[in-house]
Amino acid sequence: MPRVRQVQVLWLWSDDDQKGLVMKNVNLQVLPKFEDSWSYLYFEKGTIDQHQKSIGFHYLDRVVPIPIETLCLLMLGPGISITHEAIKRISESRCLVVWTGEMGIRFYSSGYAGTYSSKNLLRQMEIYSDEETRLGIARYMYQKRFFEMVSPKLSIEQLRGLEGIRVRKAYEKYSHLYNVEWNGRNYDQSEWDYGNPINRALSAANACLYGVVHAAILACGFSPAIGFVHTGKQLSFVYDIADLYKTETTIPVAFQIVSESHENVERRVRYALRDMFREQKLMKRIIPDLKDIIYGSNYVGEIDPFSEGRDVAISY
Image (cartoon, rainbow, N blue to C red; front, side):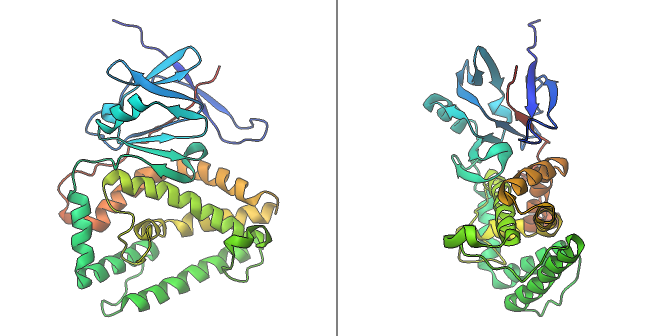
């Protein structure tokens, strides 16, 4: 029986003097089961190339085989280079490849859409094309987000108004909780450095959340542009799904970070959310929520939950 290689995995919890580093030995050849088809791997600081009949992660004199046939999402972080042959092999394996910031925070670009089937996209289009069904989905997302029933007679504009009220209350709640001055959501991307710390922190936090949600939507074969509450933008559905988690993730984290210091709020927010997303297993929640929103209890088909996934960077 061949000897199974153990590699050391570096879990990066902080960039300050490597405080909080946790080192684990993980057997990367213990593959996820095939039916757990929404598992993902994150790599940084190395090269990915074709390896035997699959692909491998090359770091100095080590090669770690990547179980591409069992993956749905391959996340490439800083310091990664990837060859043409590796991309070709990934595309043949129904695996989505995305380029992200450190630890999967910030979504920069994506490759193959992740699924050969158009079933989920067609279902999304079917819902969107029927005004009554589309409004029903928008109401359901509101109820799922705020745990509050709404009248079926409400229009989409009235629903957005109610949502705005609830979000403003969340801002006020955390403003009082963390003693951070709040004068409303107001920022100008062209004059970013002149924005106040809390608005900069919220924008940076939301960008992190959008990246994770965007990757999950693409991996499922949905369109990020076809939204139900937000419409008319390339990331409308990303904004819809991300809104489900803001009041428990980005908003409290942004206010907490600003309450501690006004220095480097964007970077500190990204690292705080990186840790929170891992601890809360956010990727593991997004896929079932997508399934619930689009299919409800009538779902029979292709979406299985994400496994927890692994964040991989070889260290000596």
